[in-house]
Image 1: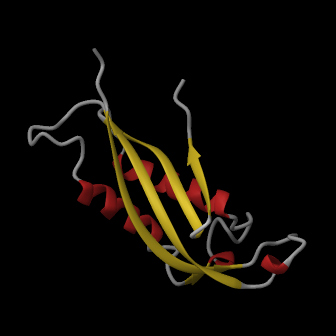
Image 2: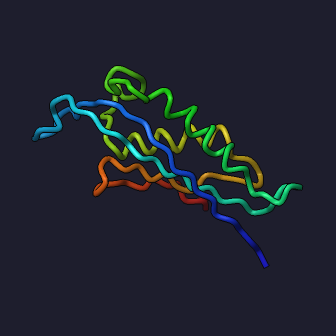
Length: 128
């Protein structure tokens, strides 16, 4: 029987952005207090009995989001070239956290990014 453990942390950051080529108010600079949920799948436990320490997931997520925190996103890579939409920001966080924590036993499965209390996007990459 194959087992897995799904772990999730929640953190946040604040930033401003402008959506290029957007036909509405979001084409003007505005800010958000983003909420980030990172889900990780562990297929085995370590000697302590953990898939991965929640602190490690949070540390990796904070490392990636610290590059975005209290910044105007349109001025930093890659958002100086691609639109800093919630979708693109979620993918950016996913890729950054993946590079820091993925290994043979643990991998990130989803990033959910809340733009407001009522609007979010979830990004994942499917394993073949």
